[in-house]
Image (cartoon, rainbow, N blue to C red; front, side, top):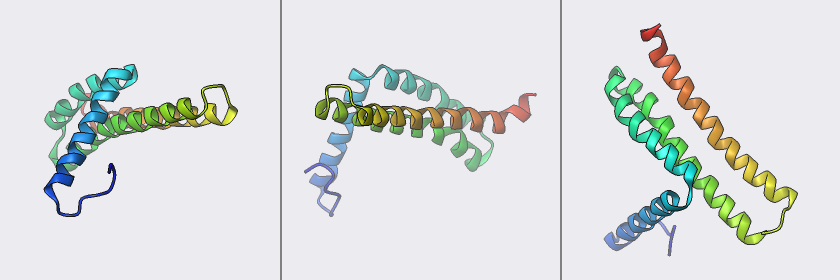
Length: 124
């Protein structure tokens, strides 16, 4: 069962990995925002590892991009469930979708803030 947790059985670990890869493929296949943010992460993660001075800077440059991807997948999951449960417009459904989108937006702000605070003083 998905989400049952790892209890020492390598098959459970393998299944968890398979389900995670299935979720990543679904995000890539069905969500344009995820594809755009994934391309951004493909650029920012190696660049952050290269430009960061020391482990903490590297982490501060890379982590926000990965958090954006995670939040986008969660936002897409919320939207899919809301659309399944409530295909007609409902104020609460709209609010749930808007709040998921806002979470992704705030993490994109964190990306810009992290990069600006760490690299800005070096370049300007």
